[in-house]
Image (cartoon, rainbow, N blue to C red):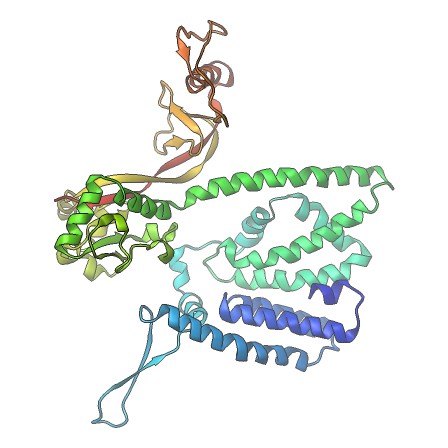
Amino acid sequence: MFLSISLPISRKRASHNLQLTIYLLAASAIIFRAEIAILLLTTVTTFACFKPNIKISDVFKPLLIAGFTALPLTLALDTFLWSPRISNIFQFRTSTNSPTYNLSLPIWPELTGFVYNTVQGHSSEWGTSPWYFYFASSLPRLLINPILPLFCIPTAFLIPSLRRKSFFILLPNIMFIAIYSALPHKEWRFIIYCLPPLTAVASAGAAYHFNRVNKSIFGHLFTLLILFSIPASFLVSTSVLFLSTMNYPGGTALSNLHSLASTNSPSSRHIIEALKTKGHVKVYLDNLSLQTGITRFQETFRDDHAPYYQKVSGGWYYDKTENETILSSRDFWNDVDFIIAEDSLSLHPGLTEREKHKEGKKWEVVAKTEGLVGVGIRLDDNDDEDRESGLGLFSWKDAKQRRIIYPPLPISLPSMKIPLAFGLRLEKVVSYDQLCRVFIEHFVTKFTRGYWPHIKVKTKLLILKRKR
């Protein structure tokens, strides 16, 4: 689509590019993400309204080709991968007295997800956001570089030679975001397809100023601003990426559980005992853990694929049920060996508080997994609700129970004797770690008045083991 708009090509070539665009969008909607069908609709509508010479065959031909190629592919592959865990059974009878026949239907995950989340409205159960969330929050964070929406994109619309091309590129995407904003549940990943068009228009605006860098002082300043924003955006993006790794305590917890099983620990002995007595190990995963990183790809010990170091045959079973009737059954929990959850008290919906506490005493905490809460620049004395830590960095708690972080050195330094200086009372040989602790604590206390960068994390999930 970009080529058919931006380059001076023939009408035949432009028609071919448009058909290719429609085919790729349709195939992507069928196989990968159903919401791309809305972007396909806005793209076709834009061309139909503002390019009246478009042929009907340019639209329906690629749609038919996508249907005949992508639909059988996704039906065959997904039915093979998901069956029998997910199956569509159609029951019928040939007559009133005849037996019931079961016919397995192919699985189309994107259609199933679209009906469940959008048509039936279950996506709202995962949280809702106001209608302006995508425009006011998601897009600025996805673009990261503020120069793009504030200067580069407006420039592309102010310059007559770029205005028409930018309009055709952006309009379908803006319409897509506007239509998708009607859905109460919103996530930035639903509109990530709009980033390449936005970046393309912004690059056109930036190129306009680059080509006129020597014609005015404004051109010089704007060019320098763009050049400076690139490494700055890269730094911000890298920092956000580092923080994002702390948003998946569920995946970390399951990985830690597998690591505990590989060591000579009480958990490992508990696993071997369960395999000898029951023939399997059962792990229950609660809702939060499943939302924060646990996937089927992590279920490496599932069924009969137990790790070699167990030396006992049998597999692991990862239970994810949310059925309250099942969760209220004591027989269900008697078969569970490990739990990854926020706490053990919220897992028994049919019990009273006293009974929940009684059931909770049957479990012991094996490990805790922390997750990101936020970042800060001031270490408040009364910030006790959220534990502050420096994951990936060295950290310690000072006398006021504040978590201080400082960067590690890429190499190990030998211990050294530091004389009395700057009010630091060091009378023995200290390491770099000890030196940083004393210096930063002194510096933060005396000069910055509590201001110091820190990362706030707190315990999000517990790994619980049944007491024997």
